[in-house]
Length: 225
Image (cartoon, rainbow, N blue to C red):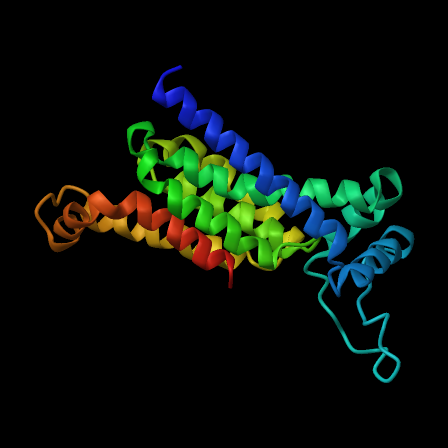
């Protein structure tokens, strides 16, 4: 068995162990807003999206924006079908998928250098994990980072980005983070096009040996916001 295959087996084994821990934490640690999301989803399924706060006794006519309405519907619909443990499994896959996308964005010959940052991010995010809409934004933010890290990949995916943001905006309110990353990437590409010796290009050249490590660290840091 060569070293590369051993590395893959070690990687998959550690990810599997951490995935079980994520799932167990999701089952044991009930998110304080979980019941609210379930009830709101039931209300939306029965009566549509409310224009005012249905849970306020003192201000029942106060207007509200159901920015997580689609997540609420999915939670209310899935809970009777797959149960709480099933929901914990789905959110485990979503959270791990967010970091796997960052792993895939790194070139194969450079992945050994981000092995430790990757697992540091995994073990840090577990303390913020739960059956909660924020986890969905982890995945979409990671997806946007994955797309903009490569210009050719961006050209291939760009027509799907409006659909991605449309879905994200109705699942959780964290979509402005993705818009910010997308705008930053577009500005960068616009200012470096046909200018190989400008300041930004030199900064990129200096930054290149560290960009893969920084990507995993930055993704983990932003997920904590």
